[in-house]
Length: 283
Image (cartoon, rainbow, N blue to C red; front, side, top):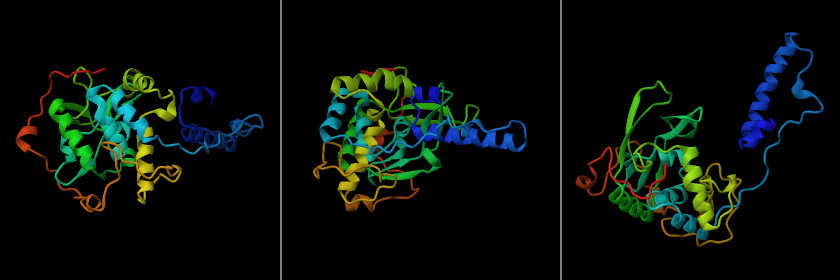
């Protein structure tokens, strides 16, 4: 368990592994293969869940990160803080997932790593697709990003390394026009940006901090946000940084279900180049 802790895995994940291993040992005891379950020894302590509450970032910290991240990745901050997307969902976001006219982001895939190496497309966490309101400021920022950095078609297997190939026009890729690798991105882009913005390094300041900020905005706006019970209310009611604000009533009523997204200026965005010049990129 100490070795797992050193990997930085979440306490809930390590607790789950401990419980599963204990079940195996219990079965071995019942089958008289071993005498006792070592997980129940007095010297072994079961992991307890981390009871610390999440402290969401301030608007100033979000804006500082937006400026510190290389230009080609800046709108990742907008998507995380303004739409609540997870890192893998941002990496897997494609042009066809954005309904500019309806003000909605269709979260239908994420990029996952198998054994920390092989990148694949997969459904969002829990296998649940969802529609997220797209704030107008984030919409404008994404439109500008797409104009400056055209989406790149990337093909990856679906769900498993030997799964069927799926192609998507990704908004964010590396310098080689390939899908982003979580560990490399965190090491060469996110952590240097944290240092540049004066934010301490650490798990609590990973990209997921943007999602916590998004949850705090929803709570301040009186919105229900499933899974945000552990996120405290922010002391500031005016959480309206550029590209970041809670959806208004009109946006909340525009979820289009499964209809295909509409795009602004279709002729302009119809082309999906496979490669091209990509400035300020890091693998």
